[in-house]
Image (tube, rainbow, N blue to C red):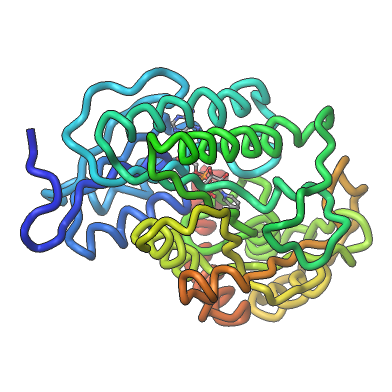
Length: 330
Ligand code: NAD
């Protein structure tokens, strides 16, 4: 068995969902800090391209595995991040029961692993646990307004159950479990076709297609750049003692979807026009994190403003979309 934390403070860290958008950036950051990383992923929505640059890294390994099944024996672990779950509505609604089981059975399996290894556990929960909020902005004391029978329930209620599993494990004294509630995060490595608003608009603009806005575009969202989010995840994982409460991570800057579309159009020269489509069921009208707790307990707040983050994201998608277009013409 591998030694756990070595003399230089490097740890062995399991990242479930490590081949996904956020997970792959987290793997990068952990390796840069000198940790050993075991990426566990079913590749349901993640991709090998996201982790390809890490394949030959001596401290990186990948296990292809669905966390709904008990995990195979691994080397000794110090920390476990659970980011495994499809995050965009079309993806998590494609197999809603599996999405729910990923949060419930999958989190249970990872918590058992954390207990076996006495590893610190961090759960990536979501602002979606607030549902279509009646309180604005949302702080962590808000209990939410979720439709438990609607098409988003597999994700929202699954994450609520995962939070309950974490806090029961913590209360029992068995596991040092921590929970972050992530608000919309964007950046390079979002899948071009997975239906999230930032990637949708950028890809449509780059392809010269109409930019789709659902409803009148006056619904609001806050957008956190991926590097800020990863920093927040690592701060909560490593803070001592465990704050013992869920923590919102997100960028409190609030923009309407119409404003976001205009910002994309200002960065991508395109013939694209905006088209409006009906609002999907249970789509939240307003979403903005109250990050007072993250500031106070973690000393964390986002640094990257939307205009800057969009520049990086558009630049990355420009490289992705051209090859896709070329392949489509062949
Ligand atoms: P993503 O879809 O890019 O990544 C999820 C990863 O988990 C993928 O690599 C996927 O293959 C893997 N996965 C899914 N189900 C699995 C299973 N049963 N077993 C093993 N692997 C599985 O999504 P993301 O944006 O990187 O989100 C990561 C986490 O953060 C998710 O848990 C998501 O709910 C949460 N989150 C993300 C956002 C955001 O804006 N990106 C917002 C709130 C919460």
